[in-house]
Picture 1 (tube, rainbow, N blue to C red):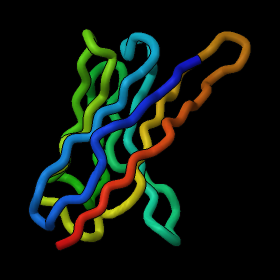
Picture 2 (tube, rainbow, N blue to C red):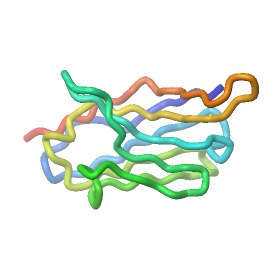
Picture 3 (spheres, one colour):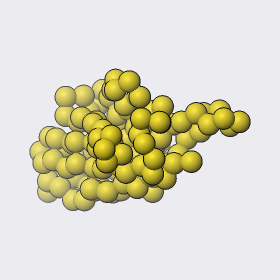
Picture 4 (tube, helix red, strand yellow):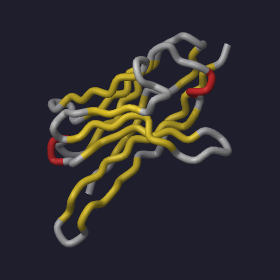
Length: 120
C-alpha cells in the first residue's frame, strides 16, 4: 500500500507560482508511476503531469512549458512546480501513485487533494 499526502495549495494571483508536494509512505522508486491530476468544479478529473520510475515525464498540453514535475528520492516526494498560473488552472489537485502488487496487479492510490485557486 501507499499513503499519499499533498501540500502546498492556496490562493495565487494570475501569473504567479505555486509548488505542490506529494509525500509517499514508501520509496517512490518502488512505485511504477506517480502523477498529478486536477478536477475543476463540474469537470472530469484530468491528468496534469506524470513521472514514471525511469524518470521520464509527460504533461498535459495545457500546462506544457509552465508546469514541471520533479521527485526527491531522499524525501520520497513528488513535486509539481507551477508557473505562469492562469485562472483556468483553478482546481483541486490530486496526487496519484500506480504500483504493481503481487496478487492484485496494478493498484492506484490517491491523495486527499489540495485546492489551488488562481484569482486576482
